[in-house]
Image (cartoon, rainbow, N blue to C red; front, side):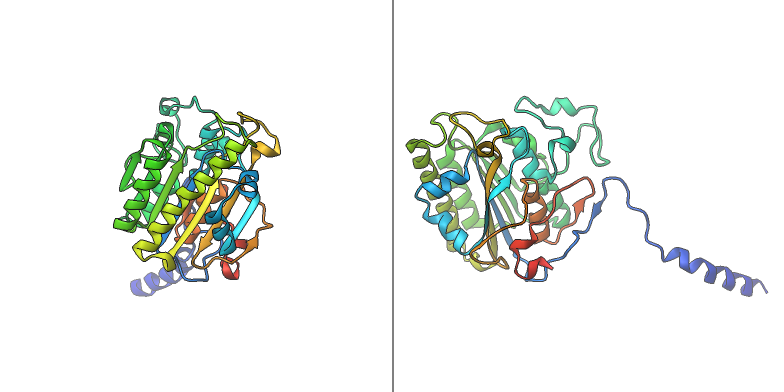
Amino acid sequence: MKYLLYLVTLLLALPLLAQPSAAQPGAAQPNAAQPGVGQPKHVIVIGIDGLSPDGIQKATTPVLDSLMRTGAYSFTAKAVYPSSSSPNWASMITGTSPAHHEIWSNKWKRSDIADLSYCGGAKGQLFPTIFRVLREKMPQATIATFYDWDDFGRLLEDDVCTVKEDRTGEDDTAKRAAAYITDNKPAFTFVHVDHFGHEIGHGTPAYYGAVSKADSLIGQIMNAVRKAGISNETVVIVTADHGGINKGHGGTSPAEMNIPWIISGKGIRKNVQLKQPIDTFDTAVTVAHLFRATTPTCWTGKPVLEAFMGNGR
């Protein structure tokens, strides 16, 4: 009789045991769509400070032109407001806007969040970035970032990258990133180049010359990918933090808010101008999607599925 009562109780409990548990605040959740195409082994994001769509369209840019022919692109992707550097670099790597990560200006300091908690994390912990998401997905992976603006480093965690290097000038940054890619073939590389626009003025001959210089730096990184023998297993994204007017930015004009967004490589459609609205914080979500990584519930961006063969499904 006791055995019969135990069996009945167990049968009644089975439907409850089958129910999925409720998600905890800030817990990771799968991307809405999983890639149907082969997953790349390597992803590189190259962010050029102040690179405007106008610059690409009017300057001599053979490398970027090649990436667009062999990939998908938009000249109407959007920066976040304010169109300043820190809010936009932060948005690019955190998958959300300043309304959530609360980095509103270049004056932001880590001490500003000493008593704040994001995504269920500890007080003072940074809003989770793509670097942390990928480290949790791939504990043994090589993850590298090289940056040319000192303040970029404060926007991401100190304990998740295999290599996190503050370099000196755009030439040194590109050279070091290229050498590291050749020698180590990292799973994820983020290259930040603080290059132009602030001093020489947007829309000037000197600005377009600087865009051509940035194109050559991107070329160094692409050459490194080929030299490493990983071209067929790599996806490259090139974008910017903001545009600009004259020597300034920070406002809401199209010249300041519109940024280029270019993606090329394994599983990416070729020679396609994207129609899907793109925000800069979609970059992190797209990278997570490429690696089939899960994203925090506090991220609000979306993967740019239109760029994928088979629409990434």
